[in-house]
Image (tube, rainbow, N blue to C red; front, top):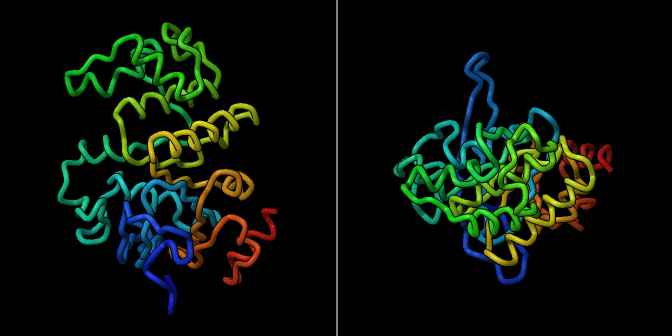
Length: 256
């Protein structure tokens, strides 16, 4: 995090939660050029909050997010969840605990219900129609969609089905990589409402990468500013105008 920066994500938030993730010296280099994408990134991600990650394009935001459930393999000793090194965990078990939603929804063949049931079926559990309907409702979808094919859905509906499918695994953490960038304002609001509801009802820890500063200000409890592979500032959403790092400040000024 830069000279003199604290290791801890939250510095002055009341009733600081325990860290869900502890990240220490997370480093990744480009396989083609060898240049640093992440440079000894150090941060604590608190449990039960919505954490926004913003910064200029090419800063390493998505790369950081994908390390947290081993979509790329970090070095041992660099990422811990609930105090356990994720490199020591079964990767499928980790991804059930740490679910991820991507920018564009990718639904499997079959019905909406088939998609929602997919993860539990891998563990030998078949969700009932009522359980599927409840998961769809959590993602702000009507149960009547359960029998529809993915090809019959709008992009916004498909993204919310993908959210319901992720929630079916009962994750403790949601990683969201630009989850609403392809959606209209109403669908965007539906996804944002679902994120906030999951925090309130389940104590879900959510980490969201977004280019939209306004979105982060709407839903995040705390914001990490990522520049050139380092978290240079950690602020509350209403404090973003007080950013001091020159590149972070310029990004925020141009984004407002």
